[in-house]
Image 1 (spheres, rainbow, N blue to C red):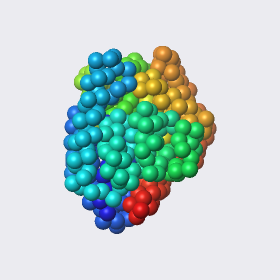
Image 2: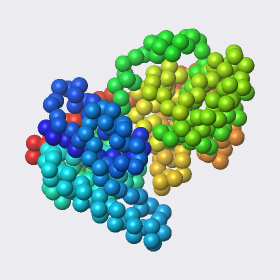
Image 3: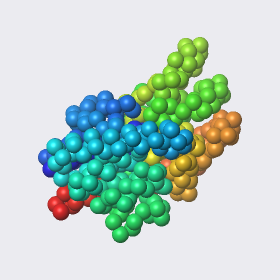
Image 4: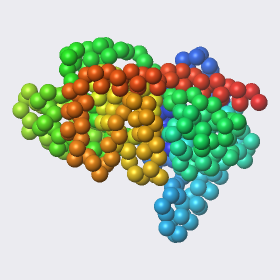
Length: 362
């Protein structure tokens, strides 16, 4: 089987594509896989680290552009579509798998032009412009949650859940805590804004550290921009408190940290819909207002399911009190943990593989 992957530049789009690739390997399916996307958003390093060849395809965002910038973006998308068509024609994939984001759009259009089967996956509850456009191009569609069917053609859409890394299911809470050197009764908070961090959340956590650290261990994934500031704050702490503050720009072992934690503070990008349930992790979600505000729908989905509390960015001054109130209420955390676990779909990646195999046979 030859499979082309294409995805937007954020982790919420790239990670499910890679999880589906891992599911192919886990099922022993021999596949020649290539990733198609732009080179200027960090995809290449992450993809090639998995051993997947990378095919450069220019792309550009169009949302919120002025007339001149929009014209330039449209030209870049047209150029990207031509580049994708050339590469796809040479590769001759049996199926193309898109997880949305503007970076996926040129390859998806090229797949339609070349009449290659296209499976489009919507990771969020509500689609951005790229997935809205790709619904018209897709052979089949998959999505995370039933709520997304309000925006998608039901006749060709299957609800699979969000594909997450196998690491979330390979350890239980006690094993994850042992791996991190945490006591079984430690109160643990994990903070992760997004792949590149979230400055507003980081600033709120920096302000909250004096109140939290006397009784809470904080794992703080800051993103690269705020990592130096976080390290300076840690260096200024007395040793006992410094041991409870673990900042880093990025953590490869984030699945282990999430499984071990009592509570998360996060943005509400697409990945939370899969990773928080997989980790059985209660959360405070601070939805971003960018990219059409789709994060608010993601946050509300988890909150309505009882697994999360939504905190608007304008209300971040109340983060310390909210986090402390939840961490001091084991019964509520246990109920939220059960609610998160009920939303998990461990077979999501394999279900998408089934869809890809189906269209590849056509």
